Length: 473
Image (cartoon, rainbow, N blue to C red; front, side, top):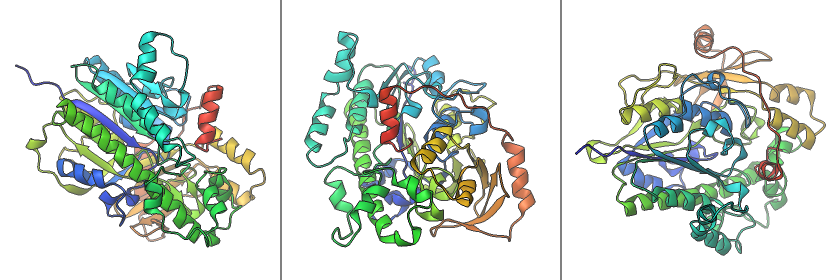
């Protein structure tokens, strides 16, 4: 009898910084289940996203290519790839492929998710079902998730709709005997930060009587898009240390809530008897700024606060491995070839990534940021009068190369900037003591000089509501 092909459960915890997780020793128990899961998995301490926000980062994970190669810089862009996506590849191998997200940029109507047989855009629910089968999938199957939302609504002003996403994935995992590829983007850690209880209270370390709660709610994007005002210089960065600490408390609660959802997904694998034969990947698409470099949220930079992400990989057949944490340098473009290699499938020659488990060790990672037209216009509408110097610093497209010691950030406007990288915040510190030519050659030899044109799609009411809720417009 042939061995059963392995399953893949691919979990992205949206907007999670590595240094805010307990698997990275952050000092708070934000990811206790991931700590437990790490006993059966490899933890990569130096994993970096190929882009600082959701659309290009997901495309890089699903294609193993850097953003200037695949061209998916914001929602609605067209993919430019000579090889199929991960979902298309596994679909061709007779995998059941399904996913769930509540983010317009990577929903079922985008090229970045092509290849998935079933895909639920959670932000569009509730919607009128077109058939009895669709009614079952969208409502009967997801009833436990709706009930959990109802029970939490008394304790939070934010709907924890990730319950629905998880119920969808759990149901699809149970639907058949063929191997599956399940993908979920757990959006809870993305702003606005207002975690459901008990996780909000668990991490609150500030005095609400002496803390400017209006500013906390503003910078948490609970009341307005405070990240835009802060980034535009309208909130004094020198007065926000106590407030940012409170914001990070709520952020920690969101991460802890997400950790619980991961636990529920893995529990379903155990219940189905397929845990051992399932590759589990848990990572994030990008991090967050909390005032470092006069930035907030996850735009306008390629600093480590946005690029350094957690990465945990549990391979199938866990008894055959000796699990460790490793300091080796890893890019999220490496996930695509790693999965194919582990599944004994051919890896396209056009990928930029490498098999993480190969003997080759990276000496550098790359990342790219094309200024999103939607984010730029959203900031200009929210804060019409921005200081010219701040505007010039923000409205740039960027490329970077990072080694274990140094980073070069190249701008399409303005001089190159060179940094030493470290653990203390802010993690990137300007330096002049560096081999500039070597770093510049690394970028020119690897990344495309020009970014492809952006093609925008019109927004319906549900899409606009979703993007407004996420703080993009």
